[in-house]
Length: 206
Image 1 (cartoon, rainbow, N blue to C red):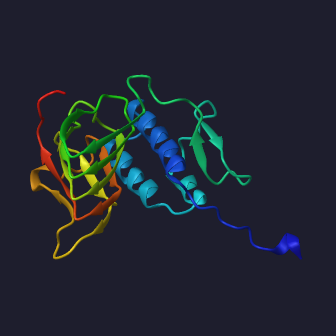
Image 2 (tube, rainbow, N blue to C red):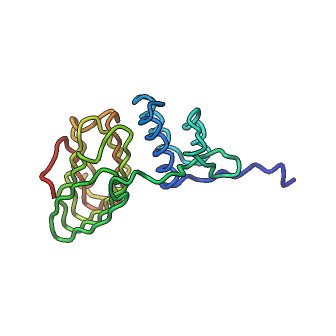
Image 3 (cartoon, rainbow, N blue to C red):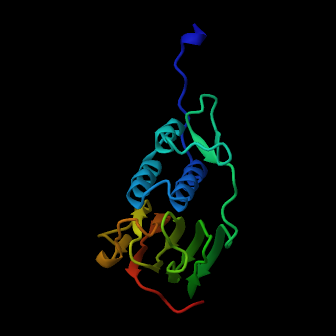
């Protein structure tokens, strides 16, 4: 009877999604995916809840040197090669009762910040590019950042927002809402009476 029991599905985590996104980025860089195909598959990865949903996303892109199975049915994949050594892949900082300008360097894949009655600017203009996915995990209490992006960047807001009369959340400038052809920014974090503004352009270097 145990052999007939349905196999349990495993939930996907951020690390699993990041691994598949790296595969898609590399496939685009090597000319195996067009911008449109890459953006469509990136969206599927970001919406995926279970590991087995990744199999269709990387279909026809399976190369042994880049991909390894992460479950016993080989229904999901992850990247076996490290991210490009063009900068720190993760950065973390704290902003307390102050303001700061942060310029994200190329190669960064995740930036984390906790802001308490503070904020400033986060400049992503040098870090973005076709296929690049950067997660900003920004926890803020009565605070927030101005986030600067170049043209063509898709912004996905997955923040948890708590406020009164709309006093929380992120405001994406219409000009800064791109089609993903120049990368994707994912906003995460807990916002308590806080929010961020996403705008087109650059800020002064920090």
